[in-house]
Length: 319
Image: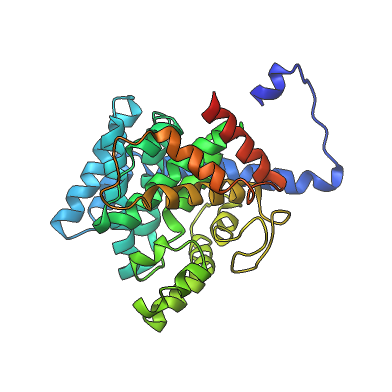
């Protein structure tokens, strides 16, 4: 709304036939943000802690609570926030494996999203994130997801889509998109053709889990209470490609949702960053890394919204 105020726009008009849809969407979005606050106040987190029995899990809940309290006073260091987010994501996976999408999982997910939102607001710019990113073989899936949330939100910000709700959707999608994979190594593959080149390293069950994971994660997200209406689409489309060669639906840029397009570009960037070979020259300039990534994807990102995303990233880099 501020953008339109700055342009001196006074009135909006909407078709009568669209009023009910608009009111319903607004209501869902407002309820989602209210629900997020409810799930992350100190008393609520205290109740969540009582639902865990293992000492390390209880200590992690306390750590999340402490980090959120620091975030409220804007005193949470960026490194502490991202580290806690990664650990929270690990606990989310553990809870999902044992209990599925129960109240503990949803509660933990929403608290983790709020924590990430607070660190994203203080995150370095994209170039610095690329420079700082480290590949941890033992924690790849969690690092991959947290870095994805930060980069997706940064790209959305470059596009001018910087509302808390947009960041919330992209962050939750980042946390959930690969959570059903039964082997963390599968998260490295950008598509089914890449996986097939190394199919002999995985069981049939693991390969099936990869092929099905976009739909499974989307279905999982729809089990949440009070979830933003578009988040499942971001998750279900995160392996689609602008030219229609992705999966599971093989749709092209014209049918890929706007936030899903941002998520796909961020996902490609994370894969590029974390695929740097072990022992790579750490003095290598991060600007060169970003130029290489954008040049590698220059032709892929020349249609529809993908072209706009490419353009704002290129301008940001060259400026």
